[in-house]
Image (tube, rainbow, N blue to C red; front, side):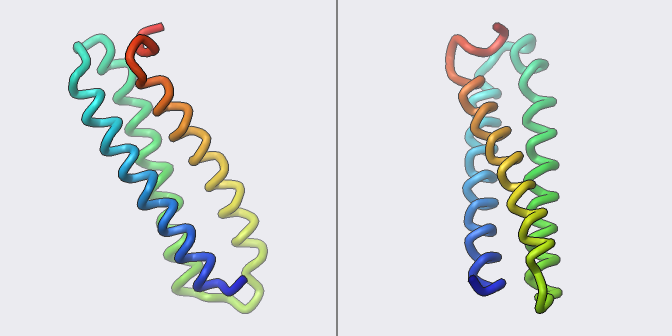
Length: 100
């Protein structure tokens, strides 16, 4: 796989995460203050992780090293972690799951 193709795929994933986070924020806005207090820090943390992932993809795309496998491995790990976190948080936002 070419580095440009990989970056394009990763950027698409970051965009999907951002859309999911925006949806999560809208859902959180409908909650009472107690539920919001529980979920907003998580959304903020996920937001930071998504920004970090995007910065790493941008760095890879800009540097475009000939041997980019170490960076690809790092990004694959990061994307696996962030993707799982976003999906888990989205499930936790479903009605009845917030607040235990």
